[in-house]
Amino acid sequence: MIDTLLIDRDMNNWSVRLFTNYKGQSFNLINNEDKISFKPNNRAGVGFGLGTSKLIIDIAFNLKGNEENPTQRFDMQGSLIVGSNHLVGLYVQRYKGFNVKNNFNEPEFFSSDITSLSIGFSYLYSFDEISFSSATLKAGLAKEEKKHFISYGVGGFMVYDNFYTDNTIIPYNGDFNEDAYLNEFKGIGVGVSGGILSVFVLPANFFATLNVIPGIGFMYKKGYSETNNYRASNPMLYKLDYNAGIGYNYKRFYITLLYGSSIYTTNLDYGLNYLFSNTKAKISIGYKIKVNKKIKTSL
Image (tube, rainbow, N blue to C red; front, side):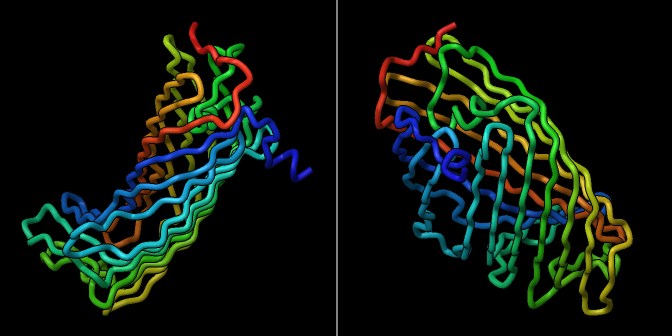
C-alpha cells in the first residue's frame, strides 16, 4: 500500500532536474503606523533533484558568496501527494542572523543573534483526484487528454514559531508599549483551511498553475520582555498559502517557473501585530528519463 500511495511506478513520469531557487523567510512586527521587518541575507541557492508525479526531491546549496553578514540557516520544505486526493506539506526552518529595517528613521542594521525557528504542517483533501495538479507542473508532466484541472479542497494546518535574541527585538523609538519590546516569542497554532487547486494547459506546449488556500485558527502565544512575561490574550490566527507557476515542455525537456508564499498573522498584545512570511521562487530545468511518445499539450 505504501508503494502504491507514495511511489510512481510509471518511469515515463520520472525526471532529473537542475534548478536555482530563492527562499525569503521573514517576519514583521507592526504597531499602528510603525513597522519593523526582519529579513535574512544570502537567500539564493542552486541544486539538483529527482521528480515524479507524486514526489519531488530537490537538494539545494545556499549561495553565500562574499556576503559580509551571512545568515546561518537550516531550511527543509516539501510536499507530497498521497494516494489521489491527499496533499501534505511540511517545512522546518532555523535562521540565525537578520537584517532589521524600520519605517521610523532608525538606522538599518544586521543582528547576528536574532534566531527564528519555524515548523509548519499542512493537509488538504481534494474533492477530485489531484494526480493532474501542480505536481504535473513541478515535474514537467502534462496529460494530453486533460485541458484544465480545477479542484476544491478542505483540510487543516499546524504551525510552531519561536524567535529570540539576547537583546530586545525592537529598536527603541519611544512609540511602542514598554512590554512590547520583546526579546522572545513562542507560539503554537492549529486551524482549518480550504481552497482551490488548478492547472491550465495552454497552446504551444505551455501550461500554468494557481493554488490559493486560506485558513483560520487559534494560537497559544507567550511573549517575553525585560519587564514582563505574558500570555497573549487574542488567540486568533489567520493564514494564506498561495503559489503560481508556468511551465514549458519540449520532447524530453521541460522548464518551470514557480512562485509562492505561506503567510500568517496574529496579535501579540500591547498594540503589536506579528506577520510571518515564507516566500519561495524556483526555476527548474528537467530531463525526462523515459518517454514512450511525444506529449502534446496544445489545445
